[in-house]
Length: 452
Image (cartoon, rainbow, N blue to C red; front, side):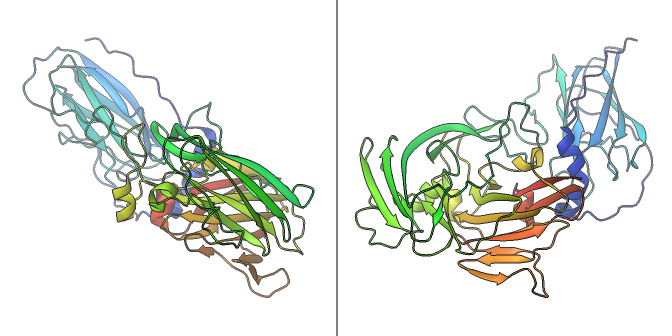
């Protein structure tokens, strides 16, 4: 018998691996399971002519994924899976045909005899929450007629269908995260900006593309900054295909003219004076606003409190939801109306700061400006391993250094904003999440990488 070589394993990035244990303990809370018996065997499908060959594949369970997660086997071959648990938690592998490894302890390797392969077979880890978190695998038989094929436990996508969001997937070496560094307040007291409406097809999660309605091509739009008393003069250009507008919460004025929707090719000038401090939302003012905000038309304006002190690092995190339409299309309004998000994100992309972490040094004071752009879900911002000694919410301080208490979350409703500060005490990786755990699991998470 000949044994074809095992497929090359593609590991997750080092950043994701370093964070996985901490984040997953926070997000999943998986209960301990009893260790079960060793390997079992089972046939996987209907009649097939045996080839007399055996395909042996090495699979590693790590970071809530199987590597590789797709195994190709000639129809009629016998499949042997050598499963190594590369995590520091237990896993197993169950195939739809009935073959299963039993629970595998950290660092151990077991052999699974999957039997003769005649069609496509789904596999998964059966420990609580692991399959739902994306720990799935597919065996594909080449040369077989298989009308019931599945990929990773899901039905194959038809042309135009949007694949499910995998918030654990590495976005790839060429991915550039949205720059979360807060801009400095520009000089002068009048700030002018051209804001262009652009309808852009872009990747919103690994392998998922949507036509987003944007300000200046990014989701969220550009972060503006100034001081109390500054004047902002915004020229809105509608370079899109439908009517759009803009509403700046940082200003107070009658909305009739500056917030009116304008047709493609038109422009208007929106002028306001910032009279109160805070982090303010801006968004499209065109009905239905749920669709326009839910499809990417939002951003933040920071108006500094008069006594704002300098810190080592300032970051801006805008939480929002993704409601996916068909691949390459705009978002699904019916999902928005039902409040059924496919992902909850910071700065437009799920878990991007897991793979491209924010940075600081031990002992640095870090300020996080946080805005909940919604359009519908509240946020509860938390940094794992840190305590906040400063909390500023909706224009007022709730906590300042020297107060005897501390805070663990910054709670925000849709359109609300504020900032928190903390001193990160030692080197390490500090995950941050929305402590609404379903939303953290949907992608509202990242990390700060702290150097010595």
